[in-house]
Length: 345
Ligand code: SAM
Image (cartoon, rainbow, N blue to C red):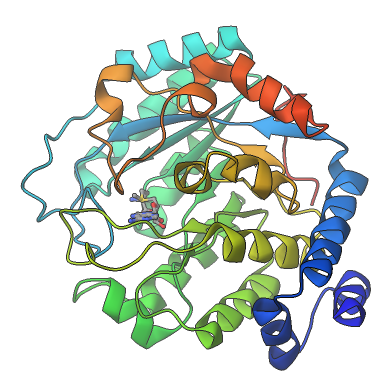
């Protein structure tokens, strides 16, 4: 196994069978070796600093009906909200004072009639805090909409491909959504000069080791600047309510494999990791992740942005809890890096 980890370090790519061997390995010493090497690579490029992104959950209104997601259109138990322009700017102001230099606007997918509103919001954030990066995570849109947002000043875009297997994609999404369209969106975003993030839910229903290997190969070919990867967690009001959650162990393994494959990629240790295990966030960092995205949304809307059950939004997961986060990081030998944290690629 060590030979495979060393090969991944040297060549940044393995064969499908070699990825499979790493994904199924169980020996504790082998796993420790994988994690140690991933951590070393991360520290070579980023030191022991962890970048922060302030997550602003813009709206839980969504036109899509993804079968895994708690804010899917047909979940009639969700109390829908959309933050106002001023509420978003107030989140940025508060975040800037705390020290954040990246704001991530994430939300359900809207129709194009609201695109201009988003562009104006991006413009005002860039005007108010010109030294900050704006990341968007607002789903699939036509190329012109992405261009409008890029021209307004948005720097980065997160759009998980969710799976690179067309059949699995269609089992996770409603009719009308297609893997081809999602991949097209990712290509457009890259062409338009966004720093692009993509990724998957680990342990999603019907996912197989084979499909995860296809995801790794797609990520290595696409070379995103950021990788968004977290365990699937069921939501009680979705068709996937009875499926088990993904595992922290497998997600950490994937962080480590992807860190070795793409040494300079930004990899957040995601909220879903922190939701599944009290030490999940730190385990992600010890597997080579180097970003954390604390929640900067107004406290009264956080529980309405419920993508999955028991989603962590307090303590070290909240922007107001950065002291707790700093202490957690210090306990494992890391610290907060307050810079903008652009991709070095
Ligand atoms: N609408 C945008 C989009 O589709 O990219 C951004 C919001 S969407 C809710 C953000 C991400 O949440 C998705 O890409 C998905 O991977 C993740 N997510 C949704 N439901 C989840 C669940 N039940 N467990 C874990 N992650 C989930």
